[in-house]
Image 1 (cartoon, rainbow, N blue to C red):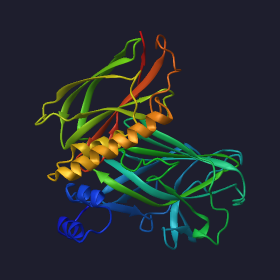
Image 2 (cartoon, rainbow, N blue to C red; image 1 turned 45 degrees about the vertical axis):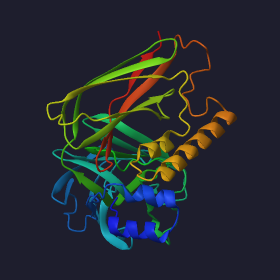
Image 3 (cartoon, one colour; image 1 turned 180 degrees about the vertical axis):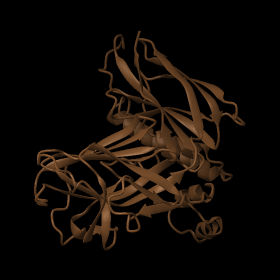
Image 4 (cartoon, rainbow, N blue to C red; image 1 turned 90 degrees about the vertical axis):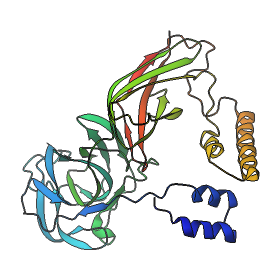
Length: 360
């Protein structure tokens, strides 16, 4: 996010919009947006199993079916108009019931995916069939996210040349565009046997900001959770967020831990919280109290806003937003899942592997 501080202060002075919102925006750091690149494959060699964009070479990896760069006049979609080259499995001489799956993988670089377009159909190019599309992001073979889209697919060539936008900034209500990857896998199921990918929009990531060497946790029957982790090196690291889940799918922020300063040689971290009584209502608003308001009136306004939100949430349900562990007074035998979200100074987020902890 890039914010002009001069324009922001002008807006504050003129009283444009919410005073609190503008005041908060005015003191945010002015980050420079990362460069976004889109591979449309128009300059690639037909039949190639690789493509190069913005200096990075990607491999087209067959999971189910045979994929490569294909040429068909005006059969692609560059995001705004028709084009003629794309990735597909049209050369697959396999049974029509084969569900295609392909990975786009960079062997020597890291990247984040913003969006891409897909064309889905059966072998006769009929799009009005039923199926799903699963998108999985990986880093060093570890799954960082996976989501299945079951509805909203385009079924007519008259709209976007038959292609459907897969937007990772809002895929099933979640933003996966800030997760650092070295591979993204796209898999079709159901009646879909043909899959084409075009206008692959991504962001280059040079290095991982943090090398995590250890992550462990313990949970007692009273709900006291302790977590520890170590890093071998850190660069451009802002903070960690310990996240918890009762099912390994839906995640809630539990504890934020600021990064150690000058931790080029690594650091050790330890946090403790009571998830038996933790209520996350107002978690985001609490951040307002940490903003360096010089005006006491603004600070008091933020405090009252947080109190109002938390009080309302507690009145509705005193456990609203907490991890649902069955509601027992003792958590004995309960298992929770934990992961670390590591956040760069520019907002880029990477996730650790998931660990499970049983209360004892």
